[in-house]
Amino acid sequence: MTQSFIFNVSVDWYNKAESRHMELFLIPTVLLTSVTMLVNPVLSLCILCFPTLRQETRYLLLANMLFADMLFLTINLAMVSCNSVGLHMPNSLCEFMMVSMVMTYSTSVLTITLMVVDTYVAVRWPLRYKEILPPSRARKIIMSLWVMAAVCPVSLLVMFETVMGSDDQSRPVCLMLIALHSLEQKMNAGVHLYFIIAISLCTVLIVYCYIHLYFITKTSGIWRSRYSRARITLLAHTLLLMMYFVPTLVFAVELALLKEQSVDIVGVWINLVNMCVLMLLPRCCTPYLYILRYHEIYETVQQVFWKKRHQSQRSAA
Image (tube, rainbow, N blue to C red):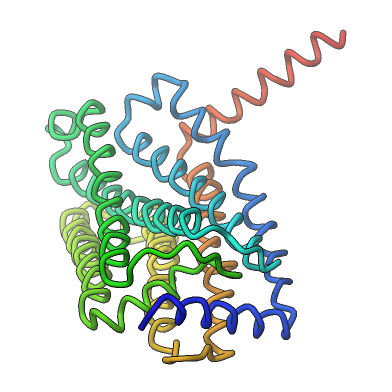
């Protein structure tokens, strides 16, 4: 397997996408990205600028996830746009974008996992919570998350350069899927091992925390009402977690469908649906969910907009 394989598969992928007018997938990508970008910056600034929110570990984690999501959406939009028009991207830029996408996606998944752990610690040890997870420690943990998230894509990039060799040839599409598939042919188990270990650890940790949270709180009576706040919050967070994790499972299916020397049209459809819809839906829902569920955030956002509107009315008067 040589670099010519990657180029041939990229050309085949673009030709199949162009023949079925799949550039129209750019429309939901732009819409979902725009809807998310309308709220994420405002919500992040509210958390970072107001001391009452900035001193809460859960809000710091939320701000980190929103920031990672914004970076991911920006890179994903650029990659989908370039792939839609068949823009031949330099190999170095393509590799940078692929590494950045995996890093930001991994950061979001690790952060949302840590948010579940944060909730567990707050319920399990309420009197020692601020001692266990103070804001200063939360900031160090967030920095560690970014380092951990960068290890996987950088390692894959090093392995790719070592196994496949460097190449300056540009390609009509830039896809992590094609790069990983070419690497998979040389290292059969190595590529899947990264994803299996990461997803398994996060899933086990989340399930463990949720089960223990239920047993800790079941005697308090908060689960008796069918429409209790605890039930609705658990349902919302479970749905959000599934939406973040499902694209990684779909990505594994994409790797399995990609053939040796050609691209299946079904694989192209799955890849575009995953990149343009499934990966964007949880990021679109996250800011609106947390504004509605957390009164502190809602009141802060309302206060910011009320001040701006009040100041504009005074200046107009």
